[in-house]
Length: 261
Image 1 (tube, one colour):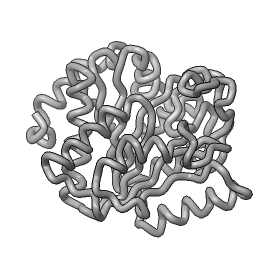
Image 2 (tube, helix red, strand yellow):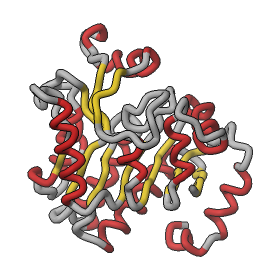
Image 3 (cartoon, helix red, strand yellow):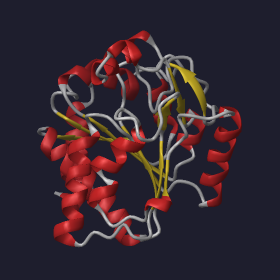
Image 4 (cartoon, one colour):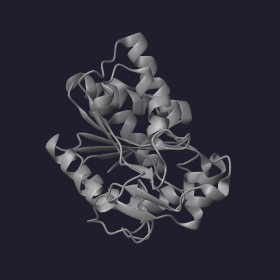
């Protein structure tokens, strides 16, 4: 794992966008794992701008999203399919047939989850997985006590996650209490992981995930086991990290980051 600290949210987003763009230019058929949430919105806006102004090409790219709420149709205003269509897919030249999300409505979620895993495998696995970290320490919707070998499945959401996400619903009490999510094991099989974490509200959980013990109580701590995981953060979110000076030194001195400085 590498931790890169940028001065503020904007510079963290810019670095994450440039890392993704570099990977896509080097491999136009890139298989991208995508996330949702407030952290991702400025990043997707920047990628859409890169497409428009710099001709960043998504035409051969394939995507797999981390999760979806159980019980929400694709057309529901709070579904992650609608989120992705509005914030990214409609603004770039991606073939919508190459975009994949779990199905919120299904007669057989278990079968659908197995099929989702098969589709990822058929594409050769995820080349670059984009993540953030929830306040409960989840990646995707892998809440505390998610097994590190878990696969795509239905997961009950914690009260903390429900409290964090329910205000986004017109009627908060109608937020689903379960979601379909890629498993921790599925995520860890990605060839490269970029985790974007910004803002002071994430300082405590980021420190636990990056520098704390590897534990299923903090699913994001499993990222410490991945050989090519980059955590991009800002000064506010990095406030509790003990290795802050070292992480800053890495970005300023390591040759692999020279083109991004």
